[in-house]
Image (cartoon, rainbow, N blue to C red; front, side, top):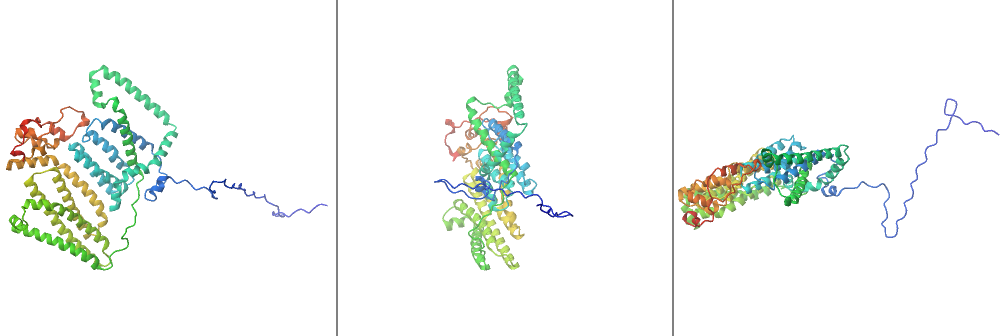
Length: 533
């Protein structure tokens, strides 16, 4: 018996299609062994790096592409630093080269390099770095490096708020941790490059040829040998370990700065204890601000009375001389100025600005406070001037004057920002103004300025502190030479007459070497006399 044919889906009938593939059956997961935790069902999640958990959304890695050239540049900078820093003073051309390579060069390829703030910060950073070859004072070089760190990292990160700028000061050590996965990927990429080993072999052959033939010609010709000695650093075998550690350290620092340039962090987001607690009524912020304004107004009235009545009025009412009074009150006035800036910031944050009357009251009241605080700044600067005229000039007092002047500039910037509703620009303006004040302080040559004014004070009163003048560096030597020869020799510290290469050049040291003045510090003829009091 035969069955009839099945119908086909074609014009003549129906025909079956191909059978669908059977679903894949996964093998059953075996039960856990005794003592083992049970395994979860489902696909495995991608691993999360520890640095991603640490930084979260603030500084995402997002598989930043490898940069073999940046890795090689960091290694080169490390080698250059190990060759220059141990043999040359930091305040020299050698120190400038290292600082420029580590901190300034990353600004050229930064992700935010087209931002006007990056251009301004880069110009200020270059000016500050130039002080390393213009001035020989070690403390000034330290201040330059301290100022360069937040300035450069704020530019790299595009910091806008006070919180971002404060966080930028800690970005350098954080960048060493954040860049670790990227550095590992970059090293892996270099190892997989088809030209990696040929490049290394070529570099090794070039180095061998340079060492062999350079040594032959250097030992065979005196002129060629002098050129080699001028170009190459001089070091012994005992310092190789220290140089290797220094090279690795600087290379890692450079790599962290470079990573921040190509992958900057985001803005700092955090919660405040006072979030969403702005004042509901005007009197809530206006009354405390009015008390502060009244205190400042009372101080201004006291200063006007002193100015009108004279110094005798101070001695008669307070029982102290005017010089003692100004010395005792300078610190309090500095703190009062700082607190005034804090009050301006808190008031702007807490006061409502919904209506026109609210904005007008806020602008007028903060403008009055800034104006009164500026009077405090002027009074503090005048007090320090009077004190220095009475007791002498020092570098510390000059730096304090510069700090007080910077706070006065911040008050002016705050008043302008409040008047034009541009408070958002104030953090960046404050950072740039601080760098500008430090740059101006360096240009005025602080140690030379202090020495010149102490010499002028000696010419007027016959009193000079030779012990303090001897603590000043080479920048002050030309000014000290204006003293009588017997006093000048006792007021300058001994210096080394060893000649250096072009990497040791410094303008302050060059001017000091041009002064023919032999130091006699410690000699019997430099005893205590009335001129040193």
